[in-house]
Amino acid sequence: MANNYELVRPIGQGAFGKAFLAKARDGSARQCVVKEINLRKMSAREREASQKEVVLLSQMKHPNIVSFITSYQERGCLYIVMEYCDGGDLMKRIHIQKGQLFSEEQIMDWFVQICLGLKHIHDRKVLHRDIKAQNIFLAQGGLKVKLGDFGIARRLSSTLELARTCVGTPYYLSPEICNNKPYNNKTDVWSLGCVLYELCTLKHPFEACSLRQLVVCICRGRYAPVPAHYTSGLRQLIGQLFKVPPRERPSINSLLRLPVLESRIKLHLPTEILHEEFSHTVLHNQKPTGPRHPQRPAQVLHV
Ligand code: ADP
Ligand code: MG
Image (cartoon, rainbow, N blue to C red; front, side, top):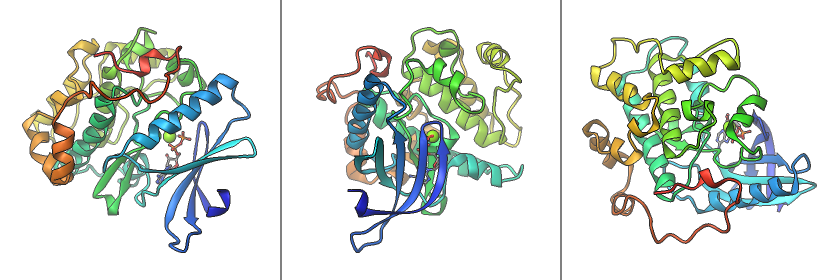
């Protein structure tokens, strides 16, 4: 299996392994990304969870989700082969702006695509749990946006634990996770708010020198105002996503019904997929994707 892909160069280092740009050795020389996850550092249970997540990933097929190609194991590592997004991640894209604000058109165009990817996941009763600018990728010269890196970062028992151990500051934590309360799909909606805020201000909404202070900032839900350069509609939308009680935050399906987003959907989804995606809100009859990890119930949405 490994022989089928030639690793060209490393393109990213995350908390759980390395990502490489690779080329398929099938004659097509198709570019792809091979993500290496070290299983040796994991417990048996964590390893099993990683395997399950690969299955999950392989079942998500959507224009706004990084597509899965295959996976294999070798010398104690799990390798996930996926589509290469030539525009890199949204965090890098924000950095190269060097303070120059994006247009509202550009922001909404990206945002609706992120929402469509997230809808696909939430409708399947799965949570992403790691929505952040670094896990959102640009393709086709920045025209297309794809959600990536989901489910893989699940080797720690709780997201707060993950936050404590990860490199850098966990800017995207929701208030309920900070308070160690049970969480649901609205946690992803909070993180979505962080991404939207960053697209508008090029800054994190909640920042502090320590985790403890960050938690205080997040739980207050107060952030520096979004530049008046943007419409009040966009600023209000951010306010909705940053509602501290999860119940008051919109679901992904109600977000997509906002005229400003709804009008853009058809620009990004071919008619056939659009019909399929919107003929339901939650897939009740969807077969579960294998036995879920009993200690991670929050991963599956209870509707
Ligand atoms: P981790 O779990 O280690 O965070 P990611 O899948 O987020 O793994 O990959 C780490 C980094 O590698 C990303 O932030 C991005 O810069 C790069 N990367 C990963 N997957 C892709 C991809 N499909 N296309 C382009 N860049 C990618
Ligand atoms: Mg990542």
